[in-house]
Image (cartoon, rainbow, N blue to C red; front, side, top):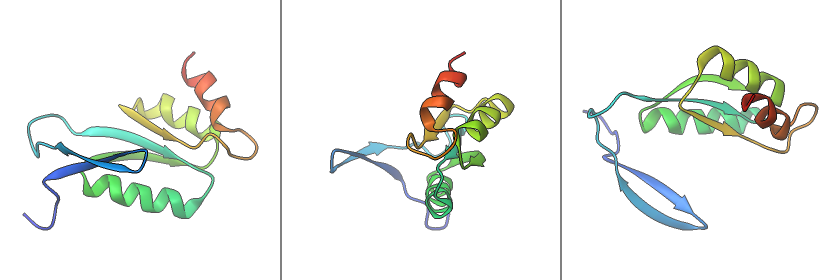
Length: 97
């Protein structure tokens, strides 16, 4: 089985809260990750894959976020709000349309 964790750790305001994470009881969650910092995107995507979240796309500004959302229709969007050029607020406005 390897070194996959049996639970997903959720953090809220600095507190860690364990949450049961069934390994094969549901369809895999899909996500896109958007941040202007390439290293942040890489590390976050690596972590998501460890906890069995399928990363469908990576983007680096709000415009790419909208394009990736429309292309993949993920379950979850991890979005940085403060980015140069097209920011996360731009993405939110256009994703909600």
